[in-house]
Image 1: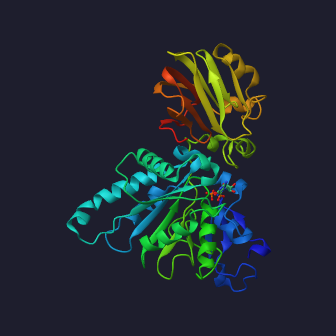
Image 2: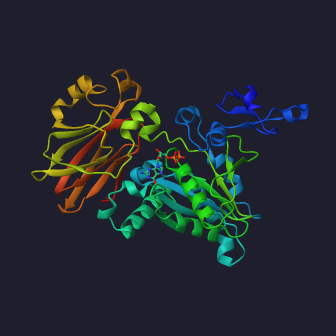
Image 3: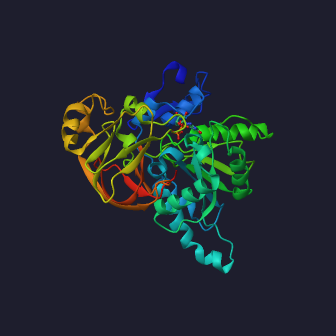
Length: 413
Ligand code: GDP
């Protein structure tokens, strides 16, 4: 048993535990020695009461939802699937599980014919769940606007005709929207449905599932805390969450997806702490002229390359722990050489600069006609975004490490 030291780290960071024996007592009979693999997340949930150990999670390989769960989604017989697509309000485009969204969109299309004929259909459906809503400057935003914005970003992310059965804006930390989400999921899942919760690492999935379980418990459900069981055939720890949806419907928690295009996936835990947004985001606004640049730590830089008017307003939305620096573009190269990893952190330490990859530029042509409203956002996945406001035309250069997604989008705030 675990207590007597039969725990071993497997090659994929899974741990072999004695599944048949009760975890707290020693197995005595030989037949109880049959082994199953339990991933580090399940292990952590079972033993520490929460699905989170940043150190263990950092070592876990990526989970391929499309390969592991995809074939189960669109089965013409059997129970209907509902996929909860989680996206972090503070890093929507970086965290949105776009490959899974595309899978759902395509699988739905395959069943579209049935649906149009009015024949019974098991097309998988999707609900968009925007997590950590409390991180947005909520008083300045109308929920309807965030709702519409999130829906259009999800469609853009899926790159296909994604039909959403619902959009929910939640904050598990504050308890916002959790009850509505639970009720809607129960309704959509029906008596025998299967619900899959999917999201990038750190999107807030564990926190949300715990909040949902507590809410269910408070409403007289089976229990107020999560229990889990490994799901056979999904080697990397898909967990069945019991007692939330009723007797027959099933809720599955899937391992957090590793998004290589999210800058955070390249950072050390120490560096991530400087980048992750933990409190309501506060804007930092600068007025810039052509030939000026603004750095977000040593992770991204925006150059005002050309401007048809005198100045442009740039608002940085990012962790308050991230140092910003405004200066002349002509000095940018020496800033990088002399200050990245030192005054401009993260990266922490000069050595880390080259480890993060090649420093590359993307060009944007922007035109705007209003000072009051941001013309557009340029988001850097896993970091934050620059909100651009101008009356005129501008050519902007955005620098970051190669492979990190840079997403121009309609402005959120
Ligand atoms: P998971 O990897 O998707 O399971 O994410 P976790 O649930 O472990 O959350 C990742 C981080 O986000 C943790 O530091 C949480 O405290 C934080 N977090 C989760 N939900 C919320 C939320 O609703 N609001 C805020 N501000 N932070 C949250």
